[in-house]
Each structure stands twice: as structure tokens, then as C-alpha cells.
Image (cartoon, rainbow, N blue to C red; front, side, top):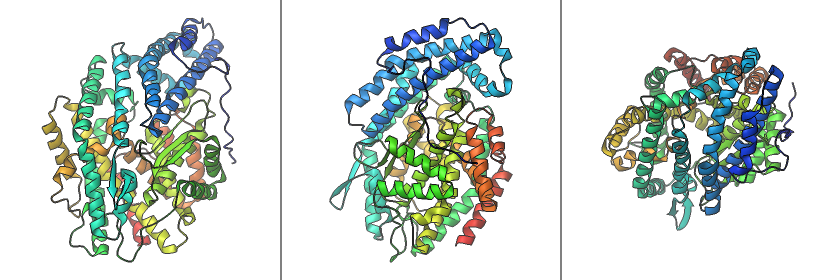
Length: 573
């Protein structure tokens, strides 16, 4: 089956083509019309839904562009003001009307005549949003949207000086691959010391976020923010108990393998003890992997690798390049991290990352590229809400692409030994990411179950949980001060609370797809595409089933998948 990346901006049929959002006054008449329009048949109801969908796409894209521009340049006050203006002056009013429109839809007598298969997940989400909406939460959520972005502002200013030159923290990470252990340790300590300079500011920011989030939960009738957030995120198909089971499965089935990986690394480097600044290093005489020189080369090689997997995949990245929907290189004043931001009206999303010439950047690029392909595949769905897929399948799109693309990494590594090392790096990452996912997720559960905790209690529980998921093969002696604040580097805690276990769940799905890929490449890719094209129009288990996967968080299932990875690793070694 052929696909095309010639994505087209949605034709406006309700709003004027030239309409742009300047203020609430320009938007309000359209919301009023939608709220007051008589809807007296199924066909009128579906037309009304299409008009609401168009409005949602325009509003969403405007908000996303404001955030994209701000994260690309956190030092530009005008861009920050534009974002804050939207979140404080426009978004709260949009939320109020969104609730009115949701109620208008659910209360309409013709809703019962809609195709239940087509609209099931959409209507389920609408009902959930009605249940959660509280007028008093509107200003609180606006404040939270603005406050959360301060993490990027604080982090974007962080730089260190190494060998007489200034680097962002992302750029400085490349020194952790240096052959000289003293250079590695210096880089590690300077990065951690720089983070510690803002530890009070980041602690205070997190405390404010926790308090406001807890109040949102109480206002909505929930005992704590964790329970509220599970409902808001639409976690209909698993519970907090499943998360706890996942944590235990990581300890039982994945930690021993992670420990073996670090022990092999220690032996390979000929060290008495493996320190945290050693985990990315190679033995003397073996140069660090250098997959690309600059962001243009990273993009070009990614396009070639994607095209060889399936021409459509490469076309998606080419289309984004032609539209200027990429910002890949690390620089001072740019927010940390990486993301793929869907743009509901334009269709082609935006990829943001902080490339610094490392192997990790290749993984990030193909990861975000997988997200981008998901955005392309879901764009033709009829309504904007149909494109709002669960994060647990969104991360399958990205993580499966990491594994699929390994077959084409000779574009980055012409030397066979380097290619083998790159694949080893990816295998190791697949395993070693699980303990950190479990650490962050378990920490969040405790934080929001105990919102009135002190800073001392926060630190103590963090250190306890961190110890649970730290392998004995890694030596952190004398580094307790750095360890106490290690959680502060995780932007998800600040910006997207409880969005982290999805990476673990999706990694399992990605491994399942990779098992398919090893047996039948073409069929696995077709299953991948088939599931992603469904967007959010099916339940999470149904989306997994469409990809030929089983949605299963049981320890037994996890162990089977991890054992498959272990065998693949052993064959590579």
C-alpha cells in the first residue's frame, strides 16, 4: 500500500481563511454561534461537530506555535509574553466555552443516533471532560500552564565552561564520552554543579506546581492529583495498581539485566568501579561514536534511513524540512529536551531537539521522527479529537521507529564495528531506561499522594526510590548531593505530570513490534501504519491489537519481551 506525505493544511469552511487569533474578542463570536446554533437532526449535529473541530484545530495550532517559538528562544521576552497572554487571557475563556459545547453535544437528543463505533472514544472523552470541568479550576489551570514553562526558562540559561569554552548542558554531555577519565569526571561534576545552582528555584517551582495541582484535584472532587490526572489523561484501560505492578516487574525482571550491562561496561573499560561518568565511555583507543557533524547532516542521514525503511517515512521528514518545521541543534537560550509537536491545522508537526553530535541524538531524531509519522498518518481523520491518540500508543510510534531504523543505521556508520557499537548502545538504552522510568513514576505517585510533604521528606523519599532502582554495578559513593536533586533534570515532572510510565508501556509495545519486524519486516511496518492511522478512534487495547500487539503489563509478559531483547543482545555481542 502506498502513502503520501503531501500533507495539506485543512481547508477552512467555518472560520474565514485569513482569520488569526489576536485576542479573545476576535474568537468569542464564533464560540457564541456554536453554543447557540440550533441542531435539529443528525446531519446538523455532525456538521456542528465538524465546525467545532475546525475551531479546535485553529486554537490548538495557535497555542502550539506560541509554545514552540518560546522554547526555541527562551531569552526572547516578547515570545514569552505571547505565550503567557494566550494562556492567561484566551485559554481560560476557551475552556469555559469548551465545557458549554461539550454539554451541548452530550445533551443533544440526536447524539444517540451517531455511529457508536465511529464516535465511541470521542464521546467517552467528552463525557470525561464534562465530569472533570470545574469553573474554579479555569484560572488555576491557566496559572499552571504558565508556571510549568518556567522550567524551560530556568534550564535554558544553564551553561558550563569546559576546556575554556562555554557549552549548554546538552552539548557538554559529549565530554562524558571522552577517553580521559578526568575530563569525563570534570564534565559530570560541572553539569551537576550547574544544576545545583538553581536547586532552590527548581524546588520552589515544583512546590508551587504541586500545591496548585492538588487544589485542582480537590476542586474536581478527587482525593489527590494522581487520581485526578489518571482520569484527565483518559487512563481507562489500566490503574495505579498496574503501575505498581510494573515497578515490581522492573525490579524483578529488568534490573538484573541492567546490572549485567553495567558490569560488562566496567570490565570492558578495565575499571575497579564504574562511576556515573563512565557509562558513555569507550576503552582507550576506541573513538566515541560520531554519527554526524551538524544538524543538517543528522537530518539528511535520518531521511535516507527512513526512506529505506519505507519511502513514505523519509517523505514525511522532507516535507517538514521544506515547511521549516524543524529546530534540531543545541544552543544557549534554547529550552532543554526534545519533542514532536502536532499541528492540527497544518498537519505536518514540528520537531524540536538539542543535537550535539552524539549517538543519543540519532536515537532522539528517529524517536521524534516516529512521532511525526504518527501525526502525518492521523491527519486525514475527520475530526480534530480523532487525532488525539493515547500517549501509550504515541510512544509506540516513536520507540518502535528507534528499533526499526537500526537496520538502516549504516547511513550513520560506514564502519561495521561502529555500527555494531551503535546497536549495542541502543539495546543497552532499551533496557537501562526502564529503571529510570520506574523511579520517576513511583516518585510521582508518592509526591501527589503526600502533597503537604516537606522538602526534607521529598528528598528522603526520592533517595529511597532511587536506591531501589539503582544497580549495584554503578558506584555513586560521595555523590549524594548530586543524587538528591537528580529528579530536577526530568522536565516531565514540571511540564507534563504523570506522563512518563507511557515510555515503559510503549517500550514493551515497541519490542513486540520489533519481534514482528525480525520475522517479517513488511508485515510489521504495515501493522505499525495500520494502528497509527486509527489515531484516537479506538480504545488503547484495540490500538495495540491493530498493531498485532497485546496490551499487557503483567510481569510474565514483560519478562518474555525482555528475554527476547536479551537474546538479541547476546547475538550481537
